[in-house]
Length: 450
Ligand code: PHE
Ligand code: NA
Image (cartoon, rainbow, N blue to C red):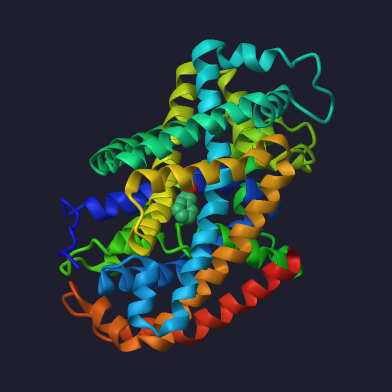
């Protein structure tokens, strides 16, 4: 095999990985599963998962990728024995399912961006003023009209076409640049919105709901909280699907994988936490019922409802920027998923890039169409992919690194580190037993829930 190219700049790897990680998982999925999980109780379990499971698990994918410098299927075949290559098929299925609805949701962000340009949020929300009853607010009805039907399929088409186009052309340069601009502007926008949300009458109720966990609730609901929090942790970090294996396969030996992993997780978590500080004050301000009946009326639309509602009081340009930047963030994540499928078809089945992008992208598009008709499909795909498939993928990779290639993994994780001390051995130990056990239990709970 020819010498594999490495990232052009030292930060190329981090930028691409952050670009894949930061997306709808942080902005749309995080507030929606947090509100379904009851707020702060969910948040606590989620944060534990990110740091105790997500961090060691991202290193697992990094060492496999940098060790073999191959795609996940090839990597597992080279390092393990024959049967391990089938793990790659799990990733393949996961990628299709996730991207299919990811594109639909990303399309909603594009649609909301356009609403800001053409009608303005005030008018768009205002037209539902008369219809909204006691248990809905106008912004929720706007969401219902965007989420399904012709609009939804139109913007799903548009989003998929752009994703296919970029992957077909194989432009990586543009992605690095987009991430460099996008992540800082996203953070600035979110901080601004969070400050504004702090001034709302429902702010303290919102913080209470979001930040003060009720431990008895965790104890009572752990069998559902665990798979939900795990699914969200893996989804948001792009883990359990081999995407991080692909990125790490281009990384130079001089990089400290643990440090880079920490930076990526830090950005991703900070952005999600900020989103919560915006959404919950807004939702609890809009909610007439402090017990949060309304909060759960349409969790999937929480971020759209909250921000559109907020935009009726602040200049449209803020909303326009918000929806636009998120659409770009979603694009860099969607590209990472389609690129993953395409790389597999090219490496393993001798496809050319363009036909592979078209074929894979077209199939993903078709799979997403039912979602635009009925959001039941979204919940179905989303739950299955996240709480079952991603957890399964992560479990298999953890077993692989912990039990099949522990020595190679330890050697790999030590590269680029000044003095690893006993940290490497501690990591391997954590991967071999605690991670395997926790993920196996989580997977079992996820399947039972499903
Ligand atoms: N991590 C991305 C997000 O938070 C989604 C994603 C999942 C991307 C899996 C790649 C692989 O939006
Ligand atoms: Na994310």
